[in-house]
Length: 42
Image (cartoon, rainbow, N blue to C red; front, side, top):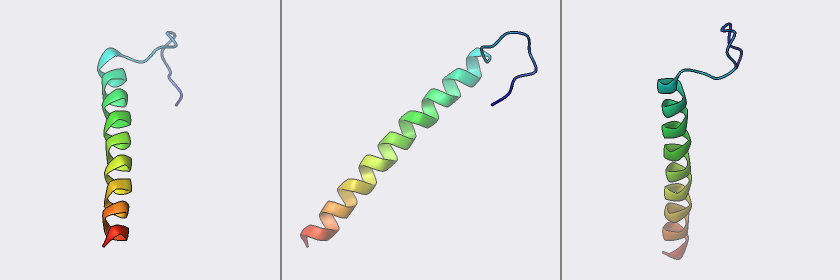
């Protein structure tokens, strides 16, 4: 991402949003893996 601001770090709320997205992405990936295992076990 490119920021037009002179500071090279994004605002706090944006960083928090990115962290939340990353965490939810990891949780989603784990859920998919568990689902695949359950489907394969049947």
